[in-house]
Length: 359
Image 1 (cartoon, rainbow, N blue to C red):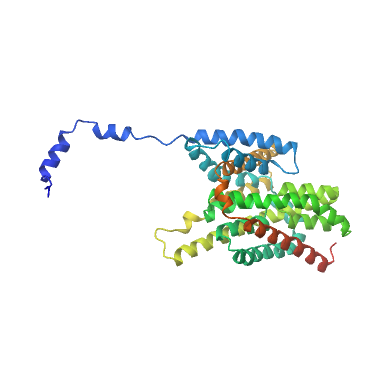
Image 2 (cartoon, rainbow, N blue to C red):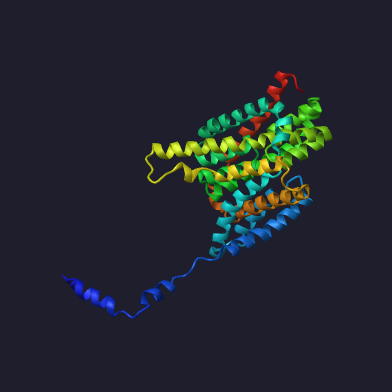
């Protein structure tokens, strides 16, 4: 058996090595690609999605963003060169988009006109989470995907999924599947809700309440509301903004649950400060700034456009990171879960309004 050389020999060999040899070895290691490549790709496709969404507002830029991203990822492909930037866009840019959304939400406006919808909203949110948990368990849906679909249906579609994703650390495929499922039923809602509203002889406020509490994405709420009447569209928008603010307590509750879950399973090195969704606090600060009229009124349009574009870029990056073959392994069960939760929310909103006599 061969014997190891004495320590002195090893030391002498190391000393005899030419100066800078270690630096040359480390320098020869390949560097990670710049984030700029992935960010540029997501931004370019996001601009196309934004323009297409303006052309077809019934679907909207966020839907086109993730659809274009999925199409490119699973046809042409997005190689390793783009992955660091896409990963950054689907996490950091995603959080920035949520903060930017805060500048379009006035706390005074929500407090003044949104209190009427809180009772219906609390019921629909409770129904969404309960049905997502029960039906998801029965369908054997993974817990993170179950949570994303439940939150997206309960609060505000893609924006809520975007806010929750970094808290529960869902991967791109789960996020893409949840968003695709949510937006599928958004389109169905926009096409069918006005028909049902007229068939049920609902008032403008009654339909606005139904659309604002039962349709997920803000653009789809506005589309359905104004399809019914202008007054219904105005009321639905206020209700939806009130509902969107509940993203804060929901995210905080999920963060506390994650902290408890890690502590229960004895995970080492875990701290609540690290998992706490600080971007939600900045979202609240942005909303307060909007409410206090600190920023010039002329900035509102630009900030609204920035929020819209950032979330489209983030969702495009998620689509560009999504492998359809992997998503296909989940089957149709997540879609069935989305259908069940959406139907439960829509029916519970109608039942509460019927009981309150607010049609």
